[in-house]
Image 1 (cartoon, rainbow, N blue to C red):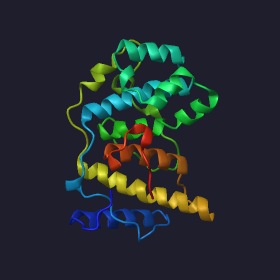
Image 2: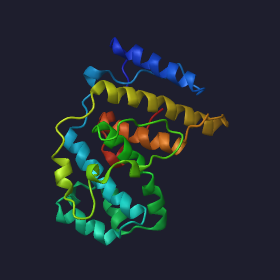
Image 3: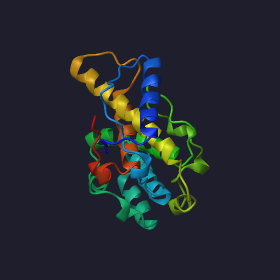
Image 4: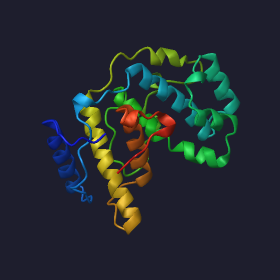
Length: 222
């Protein structure tokens, strides 16, 4: 993801991010490299983003005990989305233990980021607390009783620009370093929620095809 030779936009992106973090009183590491340039980045296609968020929304309902796993499996199979699930997601729905549910609840942050990438969510917001998916109107949400998620999936032909998504990716990459540094060295986080930062960084890395990794295998290197 990181290049020795920088495009003209890369230094500006890094500098803007660092200035923003300084304004928030967040510790930065000026030696962190630039993220990949726009010309070297291929974003996930809008339809793929919409498919991923539809799957995540369904598994998230099980994680929060809104629906039963069996109903989620039936729903996904009815609308031909079951094969889009990752091995870990299938394993979760086939055996949704309490521990797995706790882990999966964090994926609401991935839903939030992907809905932002599709333009449904206007602003990701500052990661000091978990997102509130209830802020997304029912009619704009991919799933729900009596709703065919394919209608949502097929309604998107574009996403946010590469510049917007890489700006967000750069920000969360640097904030994630701050959170890791704080955990290792006992530093203050000035309002950052490390779990929220990590999950959003995870989703953004998927969006920019970081190291060509698929959803289950995304790494959040700092």
